[in-house]
Amino acid sequence: MSLLFKVEKKHVIPHTETLMISPFKEIWERDSTEHKEFAIEELSYIEFMGSIMKSNPYSGYSKDRKEPKIREDIISQENWSPDEFISKGIEKLKEMQRDGSPTYNYFMSAKTAAEKMQDFFEYFNMTDVNIKTGTPLYKPKDITSALNDTSKVLQNLNDLKEKVDNEVYEMTKNKGQKIVSPFANPETL
Image (tube, rainbow, N blue to C red):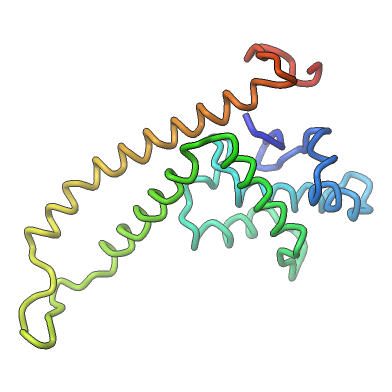
């Protein structure tokens, strides 16, 4: 379940309420095409760049791989680049997720740290030495210990992600101070 959009086949469809919120409203209104193809692409870009929801097929991508992949898969306009409305839309989406989940910021920090550890494992050189002493910078024991702890880190990240998903879900099922059944038709709310 998404806060602002419904995800269908790698595209997002904005909820009616979403189009009342700036900058989503401006993105929608500036597209003069009959079926709003460009607006849907841009809103898809925003959702996939900013959303941590399970419905986001790019949520597991690292920061450096996510943007080019989304642009390649979603945006059809040549020489397109995100403008001020797109940047504000991503920030608005993230803000709404932060407000909907007390655990969100902690999860995002932990995910960033895990990505940095992944980069370290990928690029460190076991033969690096301390220039002054000539001793190795990395002891094999330290590296193997860190690698053994990786599964614990990943499990903790998955647990945090699940907690965030549950918090955001709980926030979105409460609408108008009413508890909404998970079986309710969202169009009738």
